[in-house]
Length: 606
Image 1: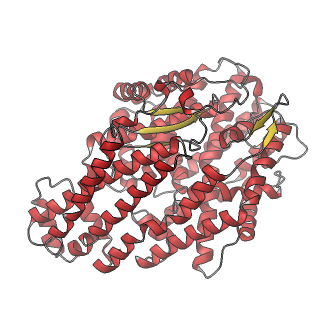
Image 2 (image 1 turned 60 degrees about the vertical axis):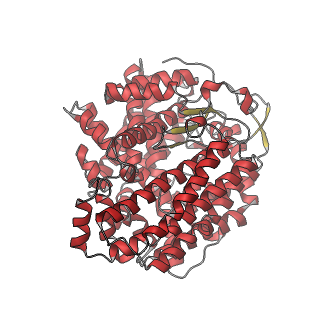
Image 3 (image 1 turned 135 degrees about the vertical axis):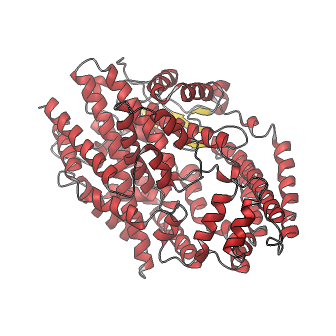
């Protein structure tokens, strides 16, 4: 394992400073904005065709199929319009032009949904036997069959045509809380400067904050923590109000669609029982000894009198810490993922060489990382690559999403191409697990092994334990409002403090600024999204074990999973690889592995 001195954060690049090969080629979606406008006009024309089908869906299989196909065509265009505008916006949030284009595309999508809002009520008015017989007579019977079966299953939650139209028209209003938070968090918040390890004054950004949290200099970590969260403290009423607005949005839709609560509403689309969510939390919180042990071990290895939240992710073995240039991260990722087969490896290399990834952090660029599939061309991966080991793992993670999108879009018709997040995070976290195994195989001594073990333990901490904590917080704030309570910053601070102390145990010394972390988590605006990181992580560990055990035929099974898109419920799709998430077994196995790895680290450092 090569070790180098980590570079210090540099001045933020401008977009023109970045080589073309490290930038998205958004012309793969639209050659230019003129083509975008042409598709916008085409979508408006397609929308008008809705009137040709209204009141006629029961007339014949041909009419029903033509309506569904027209709506799918419109949906694909709206998706491309919004994605093109949004990706451009994320490259520089200061560009008001792309903010305006994003809003136009979002409004168009809302109008398109409203125009075809009669579809579900009309379909459900058809006798079930007749409806299934009509589907069998479609030009492509396997294109909408799952959609129709799911519609029948959700019959109780589809409202009248008039109510459906109102719900569709409310989509823009429903985005307000998230939009306010996004603009505040990505464009308006200004972070102060701190002094780095060498005493140089450096302006904080989200990416630099993450890097400073990995610093071996505790003074730097503490200064970054205080400076960063003080900004959120100054805007606490705004973030508190925006999150409360998001919760009220979720409650409105759950009631409008006649669900018992928000959790049931959020899970029903994938037919996931509430007990899966609740069991995840209960199983984890009954087995926190390994996490408590890890906090205690960190305190010992860092030689601290007290351990605080900003001491939880810094390297325990900085002498083995190293910088990873982007090109090296690409090479390591390709090598690590070879167990997934030749076809996967070939497409992975193609993605890297074909500008699927926008690599560098630049001024005004959206923070963090994501992958966004596109049915018409290929996926797009946003990075803010900053030469850390963590960035390398993030790259492998997001390329897992990208290849999942590629295989699903290549294999499935558009109506079945969108996979559930419950399955998506399996593809990404399995990639991280394979990268860990690859690096462990290169470990040359005890310290190398400790370093990689620590990386895997920290990954489990971030992707599993933190997400379960987030999931419990999200459940509690929704239930608090559902039971007649009101959300306030003080209430959410207290809840975050209570859960953090419970999860991390008696050795953690908590400070007031750490109670504000909820105020900067964008996933809380996504309606019970985060739990899927934890369940998917557990599922991916189960599949990883199968790969390490050399299970025959697993590559074909796994590629079938990646290619299945949205053709079945996610729990059923995972059974393709022999994983049953309706039981606590995968979660229990993940907790056991974590505890065992912490025990090994303890023994190796005794």
